[in-house]
Length: 179
Image (cartoon, rainbow, N blue to C red; front, side, top):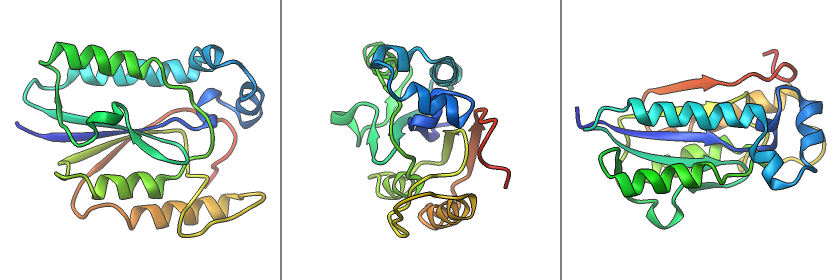
């Protein structure tokens, strides 16, 4: 195998609830309550399951995105991890459980970060609940409607490195993206 996989995890405020109103209400919760939000816990559990299911030969990196994109382990953003490295796996799981979803979602910045990794991945797994809410190429203030969000997505996909498949794990958002 020897495959290299990047997991891109959206950690924006919308990941706190299955409705926009519910997520907005949770934004004022203390961090421990945000981390415990059922929708966010499903994200953490899904990522934990994916790691447990990886082939031991597969190398991985995890990037967390909201307004910015940062490696899950910030000081080790240029490394590729193995599930065989128990110390690193514990560090990954501890850090994953410490993330607090907040802010907007800039997928353009996330895909750009992947494009500039020292070694490109063979595949990308995207954890999200819908279209991006922010773009560097099309900065906007005020209300962002569905048309803007579709445009943000189109802009983001132009940042993807060529010929790298993206698998998407879509978490529920019962309001928001009919398109």
